[in-house]
Image: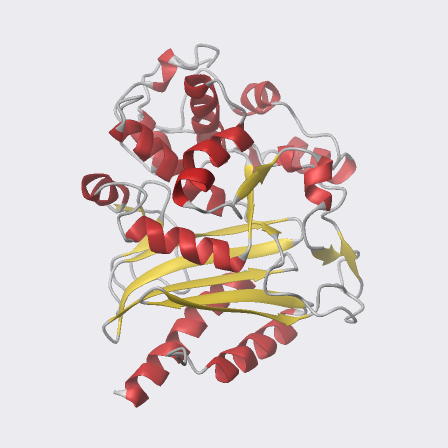
Length: 356
């Protein structure tokens, strides 16, 4: 059966977009009512000699947050933990006394700072990409006795909050983060392609990802093989575009968590930042969201780091169809993946309108 998207048109769109971005290639996936089409466009190498396969594996960066949130919510359903439990009990090493709930880490309302503002972090990643800080090192360098604001009375995106969630998952289960992903998501949901990595050997298993060797961007270098995933403090999940489309389809189809948990996950909190594609930028529990989109409550996540930009979003009502759009781009810098995700859905909407 022919996919509802005009796939040749979508492929041209992807090719044009990555050409403007100076990216060698991208993999994309579009799910329309569960029927998934996926392809690779462009090349896996900067020399543009090896075509990028649809099943190329990427580090998803902050899309990992959505996966962490889904597992936390499933554990809450199983009464292993509760969303309003204070994190202080599980993490006695924290330097502050203020009580912060798990829920507030999930939606970034816990008053946490972020190490992205630390010059020492960027210097260390640049000078020693193969030697990440430990979890204790991240906490020590980022946190103090005071929070940025009283929990529940502000919003600030924080990777360190999701590091705390990772630590809670590991301590509650007695498993490593890759084992948590395997035992609580990949195996029970039939998503064997989704896996977390925690070593340089794991990085070497990924498709090459490129960054500019100089400020003028004239030369691209593969920055993935020497980048230790431990620099992604909350953990790094790897996946293909197809894997992520299936994950979001299952999540929003109610097959990973129950209806009440999904309602909690998609309760939006207004954020303090703007977004070029979002009318009302908001955040749920591990989800970037837009309740003002013409296709309904759009929810998903973006990711970005050395070598890649990534994006995966659910659009609940595109001409009456449930759509998941995913893009993984093998060059860092501009948010090319998000541009692709939204542009593909717009093209799909045009195709569906013409077919009606």
